[in-house]
Image (cartoon, rainbow, N blue to C red; front, side, top):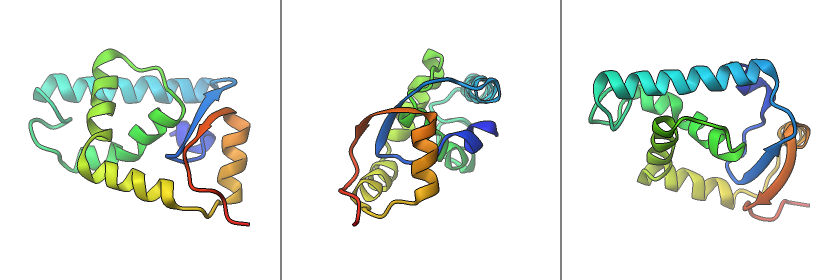
Length: 127
């Protein structure tokens, strides 16, 4: 997915993207389509039906990315993203990410290149 290649992963920041590259826009639309299809076909609240499953695990990091970069999603896809983000394991993962003070320079550069950081909830960086 182009989204993975253009947007550094950090749960604890919020970024207003300065430009959404065409490949990223295409990926966002495809994710939205897949989420809506799964929810519609299997009745939700998760992608394969009433229980959290492997497919939801696969998309968990995408939900964080959608939050970080405030990706434009349809109402059903946004509700699914929010549903994932409020699961206890996701909240625990998020809290652990916020507590991490180490920064990976390449990710920090990708985040800065993507747009303006409008909020940073992470622990103070080391050094």
